[in-house]
Image (tube, rainbow, N blue to C red):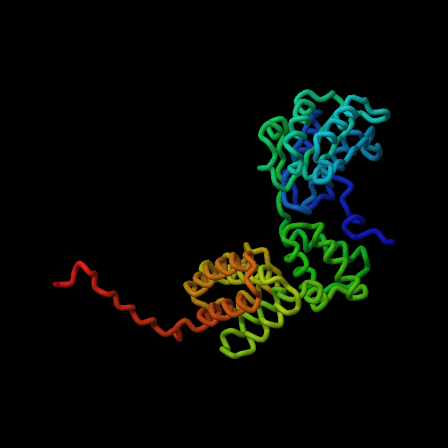
Length: 366
């Protein structure tokens, strides 16, 4: 069995970590100045490198020279080892000094999943750990970690990785793999990863396998199950033609397997970018978009009034909320087409007649 891409290209040094400059700078300066804390809390979205950086930190702490050294690391999954008994067992091992390393590093992933009793058992160890122990707690939901735990840790936030940064990493990996890739296909993978490099690599692997070593946009769209940005761009432009093809295209995208919520979110992002370009034409250089998308925004934005795009964004937000409540896809398609048709031809909307207000009973003369 081959090793998956995200494991094969997992960073082994701080310099290889993508998109977490602030976090890496804090850690490297602490290491250089021998000011290492006894407990860290790494927080951030999934797939952004928290556990990877924790492993590199463990390696750096125990390195006897810049090129060697094996860390003494214990990794614990907080989601499946969340009871007080597991934490009590951990405390008994903490008291044992490392055999061949300077530090023992305990990485507790998804730490917010620990029970309150487990947090209480961990508290005393975090407060006064042995000098050779370093804890790294990782979580996607830091607000669920009790303040008593957070206050005993150095909190280092991690961030979503920008689309362009993910694209650059994917392009580099594709070159290393000897695969042939269309730039727009890599952009679509990077965009759909939503800031998670691990998710991008997993998706890239599926596309490479599907395309037999090639990364093509049609394979990305087939892997996603419809609703890619280029497909939505074509659909949005076709709205101005006022033909029935736009309904058929949206119905097909929904039928291909893409979730209605994801299609609506992608459509909101597209409309938002158009509104930004219409509102502030010079903002285009600041947007994290591909060359293809840049060309689309430049050519399409003159056809849409700012007020129409602003109103459509508001209605899309409402539809996203409805999709999360489990509204049927055919109902959502109908509502989306109604709003899209209104946006494409606002002048064609007939005025609703005013509803007469009946006189109040107290105003009638007897």
